[in-house]
Length: 498
Image (spheres, rainbow, N blue to C red):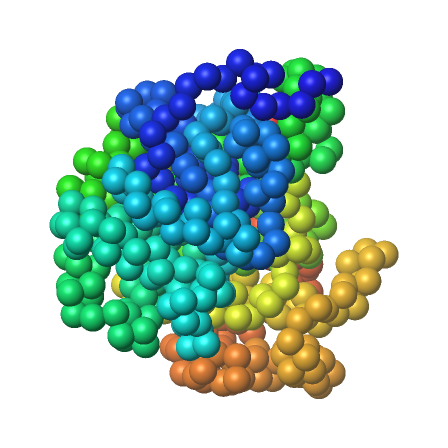
């Protein structure tokens, strides 16, 4: 089979280089570069990407061997319809390693048409390293490299206001743009780059916080032979991703005009404040995952999509999402429902086998950041505790009791202090003591949760319910209103797609 390159793929189109991308990994290629491809095809964006390898070792040699070409395999459900598509992405013009091609890297700043910078250098990538120097070739940190590039551009074009760059970090940290801008300013001060450059950076450039959302499993080892048979070319950089995508950018409308994602039908939102969308994702995607995993696992299920196809568990999922967590957010109900519908479709993706047991790692810290804020807000707004979320906490505590599920040992792979605490509490054979002890653990919660009205009693009740009747019956009792401590389930369940 012939190797994929521009000759073998019969690709002759060359777009102007307008984008610098720090990172060559699966996510950026299946997210940003895929978007650029769609904008080129549908919105006359007319742009190509130069990839910069952020670390000394990486994948740019493989990219260059394929002339920057690769295929994206999107899989999932779109409005109930199964999608399994393959597209050839042709937007990467070349890839550079600044550790061996520093002069060529700096010359990117001399190209007048350059306008955008994207990055995904892991959460640790946006960090200040005071050991970095302006004359390093290159600076070791990503913000250091970017500051070198910006300073060279400033000098090349004599501080021209129209030669600034628009910078979109895609690292998975809250307010990533704010953090990156702060770090660049630290380098400007450390390297004494002057007030004129500082002013140019502040006025001509923009650094924008973003929220990115797409599951990207990466290279499809299990199905690669089928894919290669379809494309009839040897592609070593095929990347697999779910069909869902969301890119939220905290930037003014003028920036949106330059990045015409809407004209390409992409799920890209330019908003004045990224925080509500960050909260929406954490609450409606990560929050249900955290409580669903122990409930589903102790009910005898193994993967997320099984829960969506189980009569009892599906009602529990919809209850915590549509009747509880969605009530704690401040965006419009129609917008929240649309996002929740998308999450349900993602959970039900027939191509993804997301093990519940893999979600269980660090369950208590996850509950603290993803579900506890919603529990408090629900109580504040509704005057009662959300039963599904409290049952989720009871399920986590029950899971940490250890022992067996059927014939399988429950292996606790978590913070030793938490595991030790639960072991001691469960050994006392008093469920109320277990509930009070967990809620009082300030090293987990940074507060004593027994102070939340009614939580100790409700948690104790659900722990007893699980111990006496089992997890499946405990869930059934909530969604069928058989016990006094329950919620009404008066909403229509979305159809489960088999």
